Length: 478
Ligand code: FAD
Ligand code: NAD
Image (tube, rainbow, N blue to C red; front, side, top):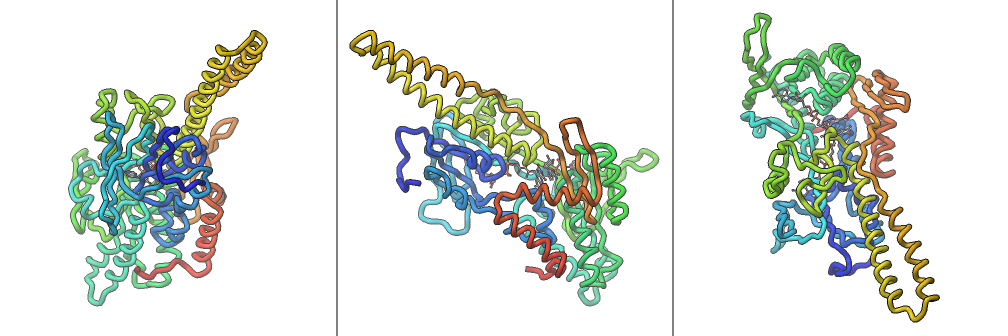
């Protein structure tokens, strides 16, 4: 890579927001020689989210699933600039992104602007709270590394505080009541990991916890994991019963206080009941909401006015009603579930599209040069020669331009449900395979291992699994 500071004026400036599944998959496959590429994200690493629930209990150390963006950007053919900052506003008309360094250390400049010719918005989503009071103040989310660290610390704090001298039995029960709100895959996987932690380690290390440690999963809908096949939902609910994880379906949390939640359910007589449920740890996993920077962009584009869940995109991932802005992943609405699988396929698609667009421009440039040359050619023979070259180039151009729209290919859904069991809905050529159990767990492990970002990550994750098996999880509170 060259270390030139200024952008090359012959190339367009492509700004990519975010370093998650969508953006990183784009950057991996993008031919960076074609553009001045600038990446802006408050996170200078990629996070392999599927294994994040395992970091809450120390089955996996969080650094094992982080990959510094510098690590792969330095291998790109042309320099890619990275700014650790948050995009606070995108000015659609002026084609400027305003960025702000929100980290602890700030220089004399911590806010500035980045102009773009092309922009990819891959900022993901934030945690949905549906405006329920007390969630942000009292609950832990499970989206980022910091969240997993906070949960890990809080689990141990609850355990140690529960066995503090003279603690009342009632307070002990409260502190050891681990409540998870949201029965989507995040909530289910976390509940499973937490119960494993208790069964495999805490029970042995802290026998005093014995009869009071209790995990409850609260879900508003009639069942957990709505995106999985019916038999896998039943299998998960049965496995949770065996693991003694309590599932409270058709129960909607309405309010969150410091030591209890208020949840509404309908009793046998059809009456709505508001129940107070005390907790020590509360993990909130009720899905995604639109980030403010995305909402603001949507307000600037009339075609986005009716969208509630994110940026509407067309089949080429162009933000509808805009020019030169694309969106990928959880912040883009393209009729697919907000998953890593979708985000990474979208990112890879955009890389191909941008590589192809650059090639198209290159060929069109060559064609216009040749036409000029042809016009100035001294005789018919020279003109015929150039005509042949033009014909070849036009053929190449047609081939290059033949890129179809984005099509998502669903490989399947996988989730860990505790006690070394997993569920999988896998798409085969011949149809669907819905399977659950310990063999599926081995498949889950090997699938996620193969999907890890780098060999370094893979080695670290395997080492963590071996360490946890041999020595137990580390129960020290950092
Ligand atoms: P993200 O990966 O969230 O990345 C967004 C990026 O944007 C981040 O780098 C963030 O720092 C950055 N950013 C945020 N705000 C700004 C801003 N203002 N300016 C610039 N950058 C910004 N999906 C699966 O398919 N399989 C799974 O097993 C799976 N497991 C999951 C487990 C957990 C615990 C969670 C939380 C999610 C899981 N998912 C899974 C969902 C998957 O992680 C998301 O769908 C995926 O991360 C979406 O990718 P993305 O690139 O849109 O967003
Ligand atoms: P989700 O949207 O899948 O599930 C959230 C759940 O919370 C819903 O079932 C909803 O009914 C429930 N809920 C909402 N408000 C509630 C309330 N007040 N009280 C009780 N329950 C309430 O969210 P998620 O699990 O965080 O997943 C987000 C996305 O990430 C999904 O697309 C998911 O597929 C993906 N993901 C996939 C995996 C995997 O494949 N293993 C793991 C994690 C996340």
